[in-house]
Image 1 (cartoon, rainbow, N blue to C red):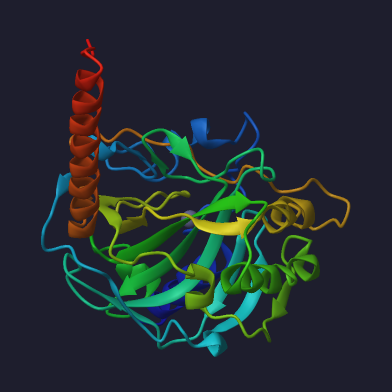
Image 2 (cartoon, rainbow, N blue to C red):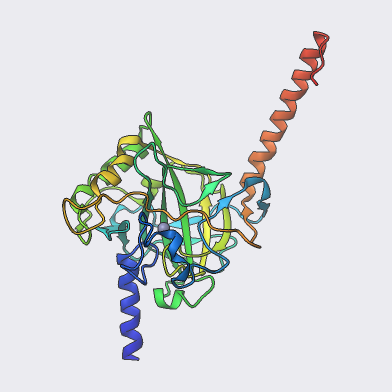
Length: 321
Ligand SMILES: [Zn+2]
């Protein structure tokens, strides 16, 4: 029992200090042919068939009318973000207990444990993990939850033990307003954790909802997959929101500018810390009901436009071919 407890604590520390779940910390990396994502197949489950991230093909997604908005409880509380750390692989923010995710398609209530970020190299080099119809966004960030507040070790034994909310970030030179200010304020902490292993207590006034901004929580894709870092355990219910969060370009560039992948203040910058899309294989990606409403409206407007075009050009005596 004592051993199990030690293992549980160890696993929790790994989650808190790693990216999605860094069970083999140090044996993998992002931007090096020797240890980069193409070499991960031999690590844990990374070579299995239900891996993440994926490229979501919107026209192939299956609408599920029961998938309404996700319900978030406590995410407006800025006191829940308690510590920010440079793990050498990402920026990790530890969350205090009391943040709960629920909704149709999720078998239980899930408790948020932490958030972390994936980025490219500034506004010009995108770094999201998931893609939609081949589009890669500037950044992607993940809120990692466990089912019924399971320990991380327990969650790894449950095929639905982890729920991750994934949000895209799009760099924008015109982003402003409350959400842009929240990201600007949040990013002010990055210089304090430049070196791998460094951390800082957060005394910000930014909540998770402030970072989520106006993202429509009813518009998302849902599928079963894996952690995107070794050991790539296939225990994740993914919710990938379609509406990107617009963040000032300078804030997006601030991540690779400040964060270094070693414990030296002059060590290499950390950038391109994303895993490329994996094979979908025989999985189905579901689309929430609000995505169907939107696409139906879009189709109708296209039909109206086409009718107008036909009637307009017919009046001129020309038919489109
Ligand atoms: Zn992640």
